[in-house]
Image (cartoon, rainbow over all chains, first blue to last red; front, side, top):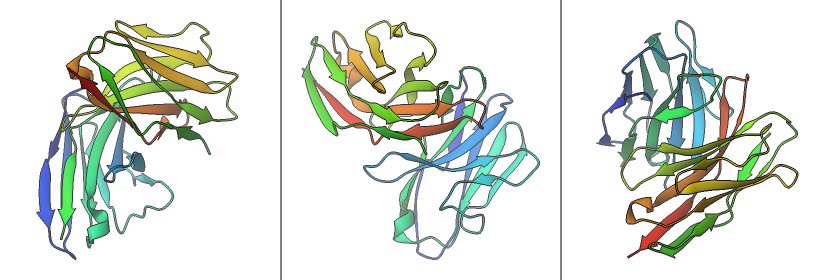
Length: 115
Length: 115
């Protein structure tokens, strides 16, 4: 298993501001991902956080809106920039430790509310 | 693109009874993995059970078992002897290996176990 800590666990933000979410894993992992879970909906992959290089974004997500850092194999950040109420969501950090099993481990999520 | 469909947004079951959650998926791949994840209220998502497509035998984990029908692209989850702690959102997920472990999630089924 993997212990994943996300901060903040929840926040209320004003329109137009930016918020950075941190994800810390208890050991080195190969792959880290950022997901969004909008109210009542499923998980949507935002991007794969690549260590030492730019993140790989999924269709519909861009670096200017969701800049991601991954300075090492245990830590990543996701910034939600210039927030609007549509960005209100749960943001989940997840990791894959073993590419052969494919199992994902999730953090507890960061619940953002944008007013 | 792969799609995962969960046609039951909400379900309920009496404690100690058995319930089956449905999941279908669409893919042209022959090698892939299927998962059921559980997300309890305000808690982090955890893996319930995992199935490799090349294995004909249905996966089982204690009270949880799957009915994997590859030709029909169906992957249902059976929960036996339901317990109050089984109350949660259940997500079916599809993963293509060796592609950055890209996961595709269904929209989820909210299961309530009634005492």
